[in-house]
Length: 428
Image 1: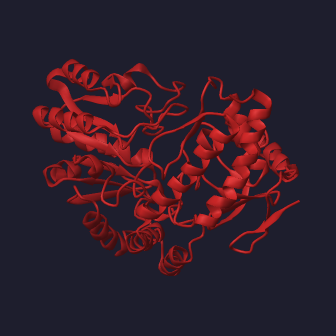
Image 2 (image 1 turned 30 degrees about the vertical axis):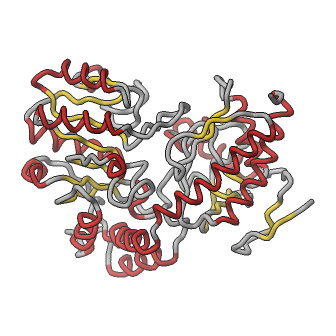
Image 3 (image 1 turned 90 degrees about the horizontal axis):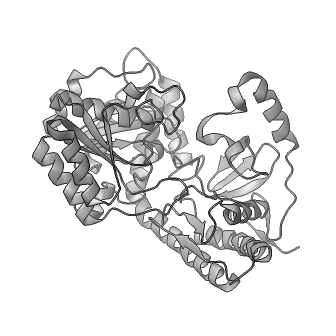
């Protein structure tokens, strides 16, 4: 079997398929089933993935992860986005350790709060102030609270099928949610100006905010970058109504543009919600806002015992510094395009057409004529067997730790995966 030495020297990466052990993973799943509802909940539940995917992981390093059975993978999920610089980044971890030695959760914030706020505001094109939280749902919910506090209005426009978190107002699952939780939401179609206008008309004089994802990233469908016409119209409607334009940067932040994703279309929001990549795997989220909303931000009450933890903020400071000096946005775009070009060539060679949409740094691969995602599931499973962790329906993520050699290694795996899809479903 041909093997390639991986660049970090951790193991010999096989190009041919490997038999993945899952004995320890199965044992942990059995134990989890007794004490965790369903064994696992939410987006991290491997039951939503094809058979063979591990549920439990032991460690990560750079752009590699190891499951509890010792199987290693080139990681294209980056913990579902948070690892912007790669797992276990030494400079980030060192900053976190230094702060941990001093204190993390104290009677008040550490000075890291102010230092991080200063850097965060300086980096964000639209921002005059920032509030910190712990995860993306916190940030999107706080954004809505600020918008409603500022306007005294209730209606919020949200794109159909868009994901903005797991609180009752936005969770994609209806269990435990009442109609009253969503009584003031009005849906529009992303990039559909006419539907946006209709939603704003329906809100009338009660429009508090328009919430937009940085790009369309609904599960299992083609991604779409915002059109300038759509972004400008959202801005115009908010200005006309005295409403807040909220940009959900939780998924895209620091991978599309260094100062804010909608800088690419020349439109700036009033509020932005951030999380995932801003502290490279440490739990941190943020809401940035314009000065006109500063007073409203002081009027709301939204807090948490761990929201001002110094360790995550120290990690956030190190992450932002590295992201700036290393030009992470350009790097992940280049690596994403290298992967995209390789996938396109392989799909053509194997006669298995795919669609690759959205930002190159957040790749999504969907097969043509695959309504049940059967081709996608086989492709992802075969890539997994060849040492590459991908997702069959969700957008993936590139990090600073991915190099050209890593992408080329991954393309060895995807080539074999395309061959498997062509053999089972036929080529054209």
